[in-house]
Image (cartoon, rainbow, N blue to C red; front, side, top):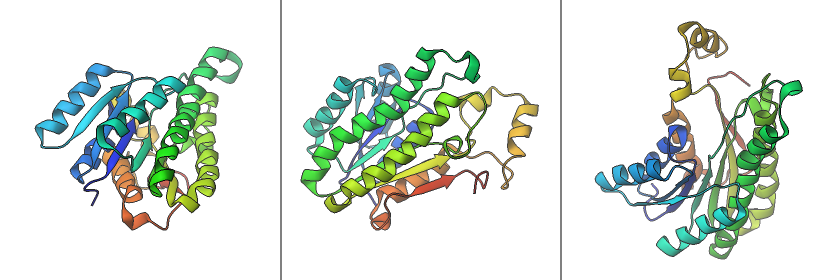
Length: 245
């Protein structure tokens, strides 16, 4: 489905980002995997190459304009094009509003929102020359509905939705689509450490009655990255089991 395509995935070292990278490779894409953890990226690339896929690792912090630009430059140097950009990099620094430190607010906004902006701005220059591209921003269901103790995270993920719609309007004439995915409660390393009671309480909020899998998000990415979604732009695709409708 994606044979010959080149995809950049930020936050690819673990969890949802790692699954997205593997899913893109399984569909024939070449992947440029980015995150701050160089060792984890190297392990991912080794796994991809071990299964006959093609990938490179570019370690860096997307919140840095220099690192974001270098990511795009190295992708083009390696493969000559950029067809897909998946902005998945994200962090949390949870805390109640009245106790939240300025540095915790700034860190989350810088990585989750500014990082996506920096990568989009750099990648859009390449995609505009190609007259084609797919940009997919991984937001969150809490960016739509809010969540106590996560004012910074929810704001960053809600901001991604506004960024998605604005950029979609700007880049449509260049045949570049821009969409967002809002995952709900997804099984990750974090949920593995939850108590049974906490997991049960979380599951009760989901009409489908189960937590999502990282593969559920990766499957949505594959759709938005493919030609099957060529007439879809500026949209928000909820992958949340009906938690938010």
